[in-house]
Image (tube, rainbow, N blue to C red; front, side, top):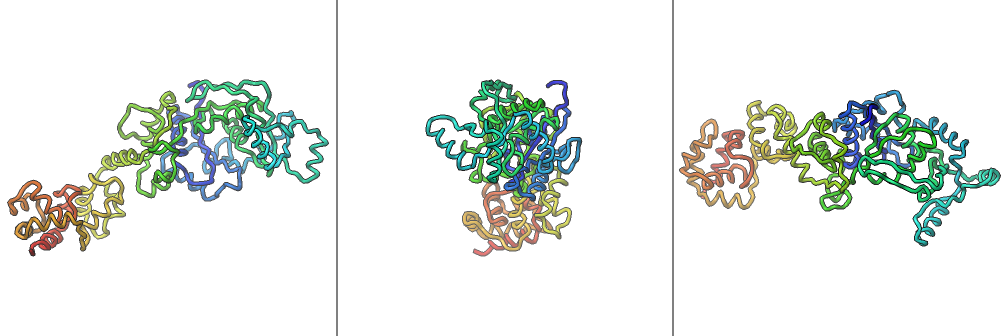
Length: 465
């Protein structure tokens, strides 16, 4: 790193919920700034009114906040580069449009969508890469005036210089080289007057002092265009790093068929933000650290040299691993607060503590505890067929002896002595009768959590042959 203050940014378009791929991008930018004591900026790129969903602005910020990605500047945190919504920066963009036009570095384009599509198809049919043919590049002032008089609304194109080789170092992919003749003049202002992505994204990075941009590798081909644009405006470009794409465990781009793909979905499913961040931290970024990390620990371990080029595989099983690690790291008090929505409201503190101690080693999400809450505290019990057969095979004498051994609480040792059985011959029918299942949390903690009268009633249910 050089001596400049590191400034990173996350610039989502509010056209939908925060996807896991974008969440990982935000995390990496946040960690890079945090590692070097820099600033993390959130900028809302909402120049395309047709795609902007106003409700998504607040939702995006809420998801980032839940992940713990605390930004230094943003829509709700004014800083020296306000405003942080591009829809509010129109006047600023207009100044730079005028500058480019006055210096003959941009020109109006009157080509319709149909004309552009036909030209593109013709180029592809001829085996050439599609690029703007320059139809409006050399229009005279009179020709432009005539088109304006016809009511045609032009877009504005950046005049890409010919015969140039654009080279730069990508923070992930290394040396990159492009020929300007392969790029074609590109649109920087749409027909409706709004700024296009290539323009507003690059300009705001420069004006906001962003020094490093980590973004998806699908943006790699955008970089030579944006560097040319900033060079024409005599503005300093950030250093770009294009991270690998996020794919499902089958190697295809992450989508709904792989399960939850949005931060809000995972949050509502009950995953912790720390588990989500720990999984994302390891997707496309290698680290020798295998334990659950806090945000400061992740920042200290984040290394640009460890960003990988191969596609990063999102696996739900791995996320559940980190969620399980998070659950097992909870204190008794934290676990009780976490499971509070599941617990019956009339439980004593002792009963709640016993329930948490019984189920915590066997759950990953809070909702997993709901079944055991119903089993332990519910009146009715449904039996799985294998459990029902196991209980009946134990015989009435087994359950009569066990039921008679219960006083004010059910003690596993007392029940074992009373029945005269041990091992699976003791535990399996007892578990079957009390829970209706052959598998689950350890039996001793379950007995400690279950009211004694309920234990007795369920045992007596099998005392009749």
